[in-house]
Length: 413
Image (cartoon, rainbow, N blue to C red; front, side, top):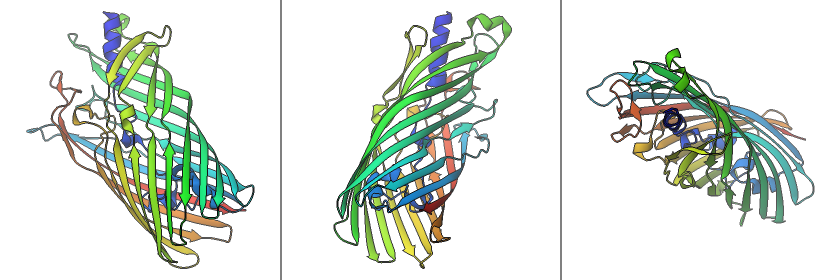
């Protein structure tokens, strides 16, 4: 009985969408964020580390960039008709960081180091909300360290390659119905993945002074998590409540991005990107005992590849002030039956604006605001359990949006 309960409970707590696209953060620099992330064909600041590192080859001297984003997400769930009760996540602030530094070794060769958070965010529902058996708290954070080199093969063409090391943490908790007993347990998992490696390559071509085209490929990265599941509940059932070290491999997807930039005038540039995200690599999640490597449970994810379309524009108002704006459409990879409240995901639209200000000859500030509106998503075939009505499917309607602000300081030496 205990082994079966272990398997059942672990599949519930780890089966969520903890690396869904809702946790993916492309906000790794205020300038690019203000332009809707349409930056692969421009890549003219240090956020090129993420969008297209080939752009680093055109950086002069030594450059350092540091900044953060302030992300305030909101999500609500309403059960199927005739239900009118709405549950909302607790208000939280997330602050992913970005730091980059480059040095020009020669007229053609630039090297650099970078740090950002390409995945993050989370949800925190009330412990007694209607979906407490599906999710209470979920939080993921990934720190990504990058070492990159970029080389100009010609004055208008560059290539780049970079090494990526990720360190990730995950925290998940939910309640569990202990039927046929008239009790419930609180289950939590905390895990880390400290040895996840990948790479990024890029190319940037400027056939004319007004037009440029770029492309980059970021590899998938396997995160081997180790952690402990802790279950608390009524003392009379303690012998059957699982508390054990476990491990699981989670894969963040490969991404291919192509982008263009066109200067209509010396002061006005428009950009466009297409980003293909290969979420289909996340087809299943297998959880094992740490002690003997025995498979505990396998959860089918069956994600689909998706895409992001981005548009951006920048207008140079004066020698020291730039105005920017952008738009994005992000297609989600999760089928209806797989949606759960760990971070409710759906197709989304993003609208952004911002500015750049030259404080001194060597220091500049970028600011961006991005509003993301998730398409209202009604689920009628959920595979999650819905509390309050036994083990009926957790069908209902999700409504989500997010406000994002970003600040980046740039220094030239």
